Image (tube, rainbow, N blue to C red; front, side, top):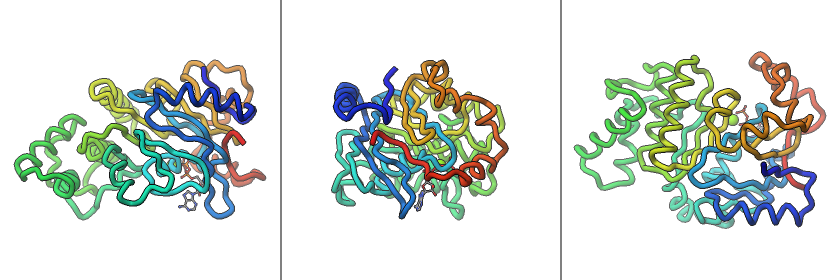
Length: 288
Ligand SMILES: Nc1ncnc2c1ncn2[C@@H]1O[C@H](COP(=O)(O)OP(=O)(O)OP(=O)(O)O)[C@@H](O)[C@H]1O
Ligand SMILES: [Mg+2]
């Protein structure tokens, strides 16, 4: 189990990182990210292994979405290095970021489909913008991808006419259309019934196995992520810890055990953030 935690000395931390980085698709080195006074990541160093599924777990506001947005170059850190598929994002121009984003599929929290476009046009949009495919080829590609996520007869529907689970699958289809190397999924299970959760879980598993896509999933849904993930990045109590799901689950570290304690985590919606807002420190994680 590779534990990356604040207690490590800088030197031992670097040695762990160098060994792990060789097989990684995304690397964070000492990344600091604040929004005004709010420190979100305070020296985060971790790696996301190529071809594996990493789940990012942590309470609301711990920085899960921020990590995905940093990888997409949608926000920039104040300090530190982020390497995505071999590209160092430090100082990358918008043009450089475009090359990085071509390798990424992003499934945003809430779907982020364009409400005024049909599902077909939502999916056709990136193909029309970024490829020279004919309309017939685009239609074939859109339908192939919709079938892969278990959707049919949705071409003419608007996003507002789909159920929550269907929206998630349509968003996943759109993220997959450009055949990404790395798939970023922000809360793919939130707001879904148990059957839809299982369905998305199975889909992500299949995409990872069949297409060798590196997948990062941010989630509050512990059972699914623990089944799905090869590695977990846990943002909890001002600390970042990585390990296999089994290793984290059975950790005797009281802080990690606290996270997996159902009494702490199974709070009603909203209670978690209320509790956090009452605490004295802004959530931050890292090695410094
Ligand atoms: N663009 C922004 N401007 C200001 N603050 C931001 C911005 N984006 C994120 N934050 C703040 O950063 C912190 C981390 O946000 P983030 O969205 O990464 O959390 P999260 O772990 O994804 O939470 P959730 O589980 O609720 O989705 C929050 O306190 C949030 O208010
Ligand atoms: Mg989030």
